[in-house]
Image (cartoon, rainbow, N blue to C red; front, top):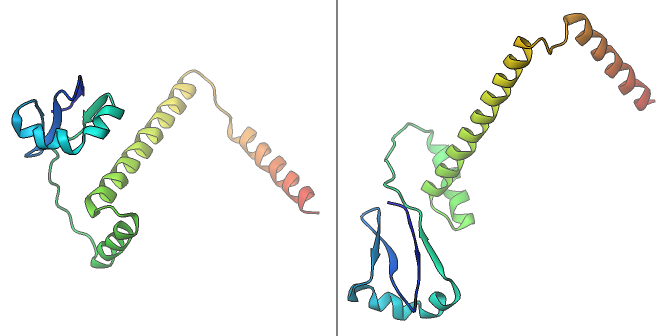
Length: 135
């Protein structure tokens, strides 16, 4: 569950319980309200971002696990955080790549493309420019 709670005079707190967000205004939250009263005064919005994560298992070389752990320690993060960041970066790059391919296919269908001869001429021109800059 994902939610946002505005606090009103040390109102409800958002706590993670069993991987789910719980909005709690009961006396169980009293200790937290007291411990974090200064933060509650400064911030008017709390967000719980955890939404029932799934466990995924895969094989990875032990050296890579050791590297991940070293990096995680240096960043004061855990291995799971780094893996989630890596997966998000990979997915983002793949979405970008797919969008570029679709854009290129649409350009091709619309007749916006270069012929082989035009591409060859551009490459020759770039090569000449690079050689003249090198001199």
